[in-house]
Image (cartoon, rainbow, N blue to C red):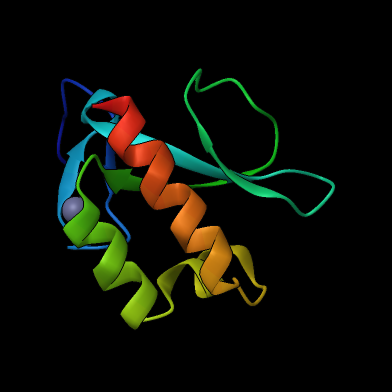
Length: 89
Ligand SMILES: [Zn+2]
């Protein structure tokens, strides 16, 4: 086992491992809503993504969020996430 200073998470877009604080968390709430968790405190299943629209596009193309959340993620959800990403910058 490698020792790591900070917990690493994988971006669902580019697949790179990065420190958690460098990534944005996308969460699926218990109501099945998928949103950008800006506080990092929402309950639910989470996935991580770089603060980069390219990663979101890659994730969309490869349906990685569908896999991460075990559900089919609608295009409008990706659009909302893209908007939230640009706000987060
Ligand atoms: Zn990425």
